[in-house]
Length: 311
Length: 311
Image (cartoon, rainbow over all chains, first blue to last red; front, side, top):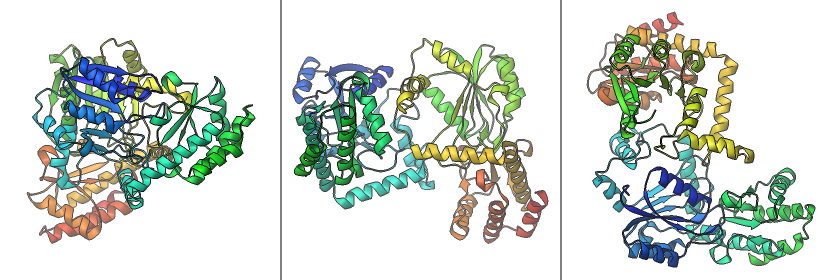
């Protein structure tokens, strides 16, 4: 979008806020749809925002808000975006390869993934999908670009002019990371996309059941719970001790909160190859045991039973 | 520099032109010092340009113009920049680790290297040096930034606020590439910087002597010849055949020309671990043999003798 055209920025967590910062730096004409951390962006929210701003041209949303473990209902949001003929930009970084994204059918124009999150590949490369409609808009654009390196047209020019000599990009690429991405994609396709998505759904739900069996409070409502990450509310001071304890005693790394939830939660990833029985069961054991040591009255047995009963 | 302050852009090849494109996209106030492909930027050129533009605030130069194999005399250029109290920005990508760069002594404020060129590491990471003076200017700047992700202050904020939880950067990093960079740096330091620089100087000069013994014409004048790459002028049609022949028959990859020299030259890299006797001697053999097959009257014997006599 140009600086004149309005863009609807859907923000309900730290990574939405990050995108908002970037959009503000680039002086975009922003309509802000903001929900609290832990809440989802709903089709009704979008309807309301668009009714109040009929001249919106584009929309941005984070599919999987990693800071809160809320998965926004992207397919339903896209239906509303489509009705209003919006250009749709999606941050799918932490869910790319872990849940369905159908750019063509849902009407997504720009989709950003990542190699080492739900796909289970190596970090260092950011696969992106760009719709034909968006390429056409970029080709026909007369507004001056804001950036050189981050302008898609710089990359398109390289693809068109430099492919012949085996260098379809404007700068040196980490070849090994491209090869690793190819391998990760192949592995996911070999397992079958539907199987991979189902594995993430089943094991994330089972993990949440284990967490609930430990009487812990989840950040995301079950309806919008992410299949790749779970966020757990804990009393002040506990998150740091829990993270350190699990790393020191079990060699399992979990994360703390970001933005408004800093110091208030822990986040446990279960994506790619970690969305499996062995990884999650030992995470449950470590989580329960470390919480016990921190004075919580939890039953590791009950948590593991809830997990195994759910898979 | 802000959009008001003048920046001297020194351009004498494809990579200087690329930086110029980026500076123009970002609407900088540019004073252009342009020399032809194959020529060096000299202190006299800079003196003249600064005399005509006394209000220049900053300068940019490519240390090693990879497209022409010209190494600009950076130390001498920096003396002139320093006399005029300029902010100095250097693209040292293809020579970082292969020749001396003394940021503090020479007065360089921003220096951009690369992990996999002369350093011989893995691609995918771009080490940068930023002077205290530049950080101070950035801290005190009131002009609004043009970018979010590429604003150094975004990175500084991450270093300051996110280091405590082990994440001093605004996005996911390719951890393995960072570790590989550390290893490459250690290897270079173990060999000794002076030894590494000397190795590049000796073997590049010896390679040029071999090329001259094949009666081929070099693009860069000997005085400004790069220690990491050599460019050779060839009749039309020959570069592509030579590149293909060396790859097909000897598994050695050399490159063609860029920008104004596209189709007119070949470029042979000799940097990092390839700046050694074994790599260069077999490159000379392959180069000479493939040229012979293309109808050139060259003596591989004479070329190898010139090489061995020079090391």
